[in-house]
Length: 287
Ligand SMILES: [Zn+2]
Image 1 (cartoon, rainbow, N blue to C red):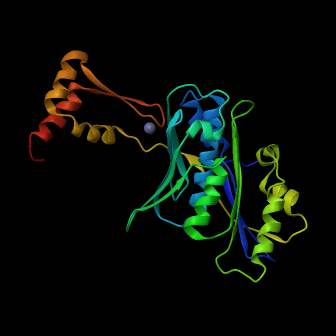
Image 2: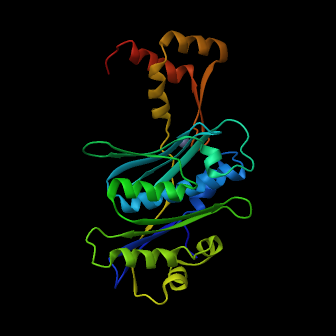
Image 3: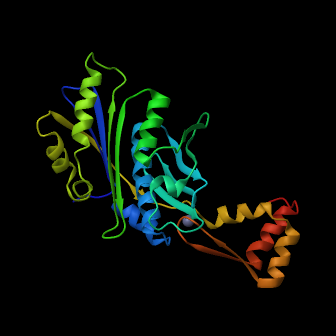
């Protein structure tokens, strides 16, 4: 079956839209770059699927970042994506995470959704994490920010296979008279789906499994892929915050400056020759 895809669908008889997301390969890439416990890995997989679903639902051209920030062992968990669904992610963990639930992992804190469009104002949406699952936090976000009844199902696993998939059902803004009943009906059926079905079935099979009694129309698919945006140039520009004196001190001690990308685990080494140009630039020399 095709993985790493978003599939949009509509119902002929209800003003409701849906999205199925599967992100196994991108998730594998994120997992292979980190040493996550099963609990944190599952959380990251769910966050990856959640971010993909948000990218599909919130129309924008630019970047999106979905962060969990709390006082539990997961200090920070973040997935970044752009409108082309190129994704990457990392987490900052302090302490034991084994056997912890979602609420215990994140503790008290917030989910912060930041959209940075290529043009126009940056948008930030904040939801507190006082729910039992990431999907409930997301449902709460849509409830607060868009007043659109939304059902979110997220599943991820790193213990057997590395798999991440999800399903979103949302009332369309132009709602019919029966929209509440329709939404209850469609989301109750969505909730019968099992993690194994989300992982193993193709999008057509999955929709048939859940909605074989309804008229469902498949719309466009989009590919999800892993891509890190780090580069030698970006690392170099981040060195601008360090004073030339400090850089010279590090060079005296180690002969090079080493930088590590938290997202893709790539190491960058800057030798004196790379940095001399940089130091000269900072001295105000013109090109
Ligand atoms: Zn990177």
